[in-house]
Image: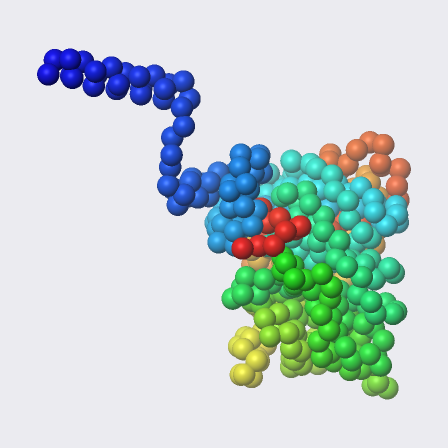
Length: 383
């Protein structure tokens, strides 16, 4: 009996030593996943190298990726600003700077990315880059530093490319609309689909030219368009990302006849018009089976905004502006206007711009508002 107790004590001592020396500990898979969900994105990117299993969980699991995006939305909001040397070539270096309301006059976490021609849209941590002159599109993930070039559309002529997310199907889709009004066929590419090697043709909408202003809200892409007939009237269109169908959306004629920008205003479609001040219209009853209604939320008599370029709205309802046209590198400001408080703050990006690049006069700023971390791998199928 004594010998047995002594051997048992010896085994326990040996086991404890093994743990102190870094022995393996087997944890349940669900516990590993829960631990990973609590780690910052930078750590997760390093931990993809631990094993194929960990890489699959972090980069390909829809549930895990969605949890990362959801967690980011519960944290203090931050914005990503892209300083672009416009005209520096098809693929060129751009500078990505992050800012938050906590540090209103400073930026941090500067990185470098490559992108074609211009940023078109930002959705849930992914950026659609579009070259209208070459009919080429790419998806860039700032979290993973991956840039995925979409295949050629195979349609002659130029067109417009939009980006949307279906929350029910948890899918990202790119929509291509040819500008040739005789062409009624549009194309869709599903990101992360292992069978998607080419664009799919779908029924399009005849006789309309899409405009640059576009926003995706709750699985619907909204964009302005102009009739290709003799009327040349502006209209508001929508595209259901899940069912891949187009709809005409009723909107006040005064909004369509004046220069205005589409924004996501607290989860609803909004128009911002700066003709004589700042005027914000929000669409109620977005369900296409009901009659849409519009209400004017704010209006202020403020001068000078008409010439500024609107980048969108933040989660906190601030309207984000940059200077019109191309910028001087001496003043790379992004302005945040709070219509509720009728107040302004700004972020100065000059400190993030390298000295050797400041000779360019064709600098332009794009912004990914309410930026979130997304560990999705762009090159492989998502499970």
